[in-house]
Image (cartoon, rainbow, N blue to C red):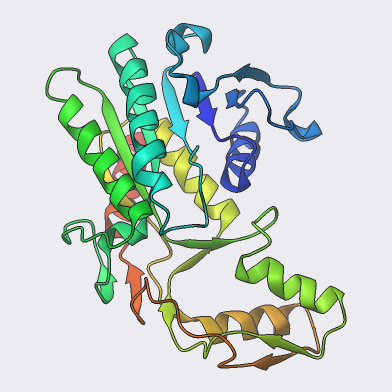
Amino acid sequence: MKIAISGATGFIGRHVVAELERQSLTPVLICRQSAKIPFSLSRHTIIPIDLTSNPSGAFDLLGRPDALIHLAWGGLPHYKSPHHLEVELPMHIRFLRDLIESGLKHLTVAGTCLEYGMQSGPLNEDAPTRPSNPYALAKNDLRGRLQSLKAYQPFNLVWARLFYMYGEGQSESSLWPQLQKAVAQGLPTFDMSGGEQLRDYLPVSEVATQLVSLTRKGVDTGAINVCSGVPISVRRLVEGWISDNNWKIKLNLGHYPYPEYEPMAFWGENRKFTDLIKSHCTQTKS
């Protein structure tokens, strides 16, 4: 199976490449011309494509892959910026539509749990989408546009709604790198919110494994949650990291306000994913 990856140099992308390598697959990497290519990726075929220039013929440039794992997206972590709707959305619609109309048969796209909006509690894929910031609105609109393409250009779509994750290579503004930095600096305390919000977290390596699994199955899932299915308070999550690493740092709870663009308690249901895995295992055994 020939798989292409956009956003391969990003946080998730590097882990997806590593997972494909672990499964003895050699992906084709799509990167911006200005991107700095890490040594770990330099042995792969790298196709420089600038999505802002409205490229054409990308499917042939990529060697006509069987599948694309589309992780590229700019403007983060500025969720409220109009850039997502005014620049990112039309750019990604053009790029993906061109690939699909040129013959791409399977597309896995990174969506976001923020498409569910301010809904609380456990969220499954049948819940209505109620995006409340430009980033989530743009992602949700892209999903709708891709679904409409299927009416005249059949292809398999996996819309992977990513919940929260942590791991090596994450943005310095994220919780895990901030905690690591505070420990490295020898700070006695770590400033954070009250920490009582419930979230759904996975190591990024597990997110990569699920994305590759969904892609290799070559099935048309539509929206599907990529999550643990288990709620955990942010406070307990951070306390676990501190305990697992035998760090001495203390938490300064309540220093920051809770994010206004998220409900206090929400997490994903992963039954759709686990049922798909079980079904595949049963078919393989038979």
